[in-house]
Length: 241
Ligand SMILES: CC(C)(COP(=O)(O)OP(=O)(O)OC[C@H]1O[C@@H](n2cnc3c(N)ncnc32)[C@H](O)[C@@H]1OP(=O)(O)O)[C@@H](O)C(=O)NCCC(=O)NCCS
Image (cartoon, rainbow, N blue to C red):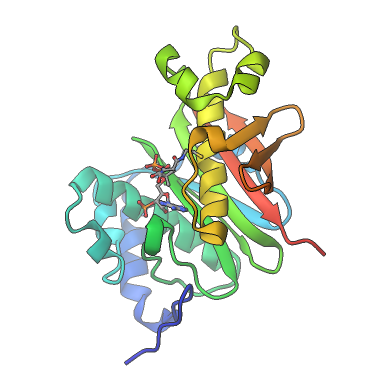
C-alpha cells in the first residue's frame, strides 16, 4: 500500500498514459482554450507562478482521478465537470514544471492537496477553469479566483467591501465590486492552507493601487488582476529570503 503523508501525495506517472491519451484525444476534437483569454491570463504570470485555463467541456468530469472522486460523490455533473477541468489544467502545469501528473484530491477545508514541493490553486466559473501552480521554494501560498466580468449586485457590495474599501472603489467602474470579491476569494485560497482559519470578506482588506491585501491576522499578500471577458485575481505570498 502506498504511504500518503499529510499535504503530499505520491505521483505515479507510469499509470497515467491512457488517461492522458483520453484527455488529449478529447482536446483534439473540441476547443478547450481561448487564445485571447490566455493572453489576459499570461499578463498575470510572474516569475515563480504559471497559470493556465480550460474552457469547461462535456466529458471533463471523467478527468477526475479515483483519488479525487470521493469528494464529489454528491456533486452534480456540472460541478464535477468544472473540477475535472481545473485538474486537467493543473496537471498540464505540473508537466510544464517537469513534474509527473498527480491526483489532486480535495484536502481538509476544501483546499487541493499538491505533491511535495508544489503549491497552487484552482478555480472555475460557469464556463472556464483556471489553475495556478508554483514551487514551494518560491511561493508560500498561491490563490486564484475567476468570475464572469459582470457587475456585483449593489446589495452584495456592503457584504464584500469594508467601509474603507467603499470609499476607494470607483463608483463608475462597473467591475469594481466584482474585482474586490474575486480578489478576496483568491486571498482566502492563498492563506487558508497556511492558517487554516475561516476569513470573512471584512477580514481581508484590498489595496488596489499597491496590489496588496492584508488579512485580519496581519498577513500581507500580493495581488495581480486580469479583466477581460472574465475577471481573474491571483494572490500570492513569496518565500521571504
Ligand atoms: C474557497 C472558496 C472561496 C471557493 O470559492 P467558490 O466560488 O466556491 O469556488 P471556486 O471555483 O472559486 O474555487 C473552487 C476551488 O477552490 C479550492 N478551495 C476550496 N476550498 C479551499 C480552501 N479552504 N482553501 C484553498 N482553496 C480552496 C478548491 O480547489 C476548489 O476546487 P474544487 O472544488 O474543484 O476542488 C469558498 O468555497 C469558500 O470556502 N468561502 C468561504 C470563505 C470566503 O469566501 N470568505 C470571504 C473571502 S475572504
